[in-house]
Image 1 (cartoon, rainbow, N blue to C red):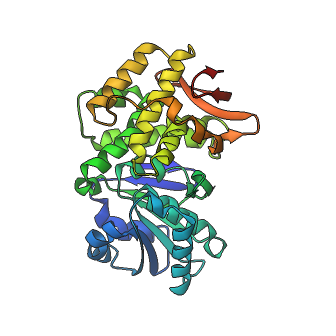
Image 2 (image 1 turned 60 degrees about the vertical axis):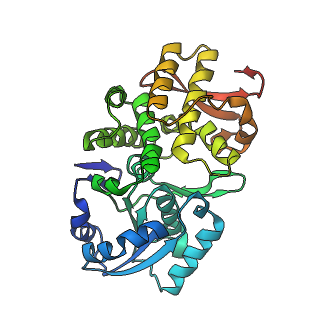
Length: 339
């Protein structure tokens, strides 16, 4: 299936890996690709990529796996290596990896030589349904996640769900949180499927992408509706920082969604039944466990959240399934809360 977002396409097809060569030729006339990937993927896919992309000369830039690679230090390392490899402004960067690789490589592409084109090839579930879509790229600072970044659309996003077959169980589970988020904010049928199944089909992946695609088309630069996609992320990012990124993004977002729903119940915005249903689903899929993490332990981290504007924090509550609400100037306190 091909989905259009602004001026680029998302192509989703099983066994697309073996057609990467032809797909890239549709958006790029050069003969050289600079592939940014992580060390784990490089070990598995170096030769496979050379075979799949046989029309191109490949230059690999390999980073350590993990969230800590979304840093100024690794950003500088990648840029320096690209310069040493003589990258030119009309040559193509390929982000081959999960969300960390995609965010970092997209930010590098938007800034090195004042901008070179790039392609997203997500290899994790989280990257397929979320981070590779919508053009938001960036890196983390010690003060918080994604505080340095830009909007930079790829030339194309190539998604082959078969790449998930070798994904570790914990990484697959990590991506399920973003699928559940898509179900909560935009397509309840995804949740109905996950109540009975642990593994997604290509249909649920497409549905999750479609939720994000529709929102991004309405609000490409996050002025209003695109903030719906931040549901669960304010406290999710705070949880990640608290644990120094030892906890996976999807797990943190799962707890963040429960905190947001619980706060919505306390403030009279969210139905108690919605909270209980999502809690049961997250427990069943082993995205959270009891005792649950609680809001008061993470409030101190949200002051620098990128969703803070001059008049306070924008926070996403749910009045019902598929009915997110952005509340302005929301205040949280470790022991009490006010609206």
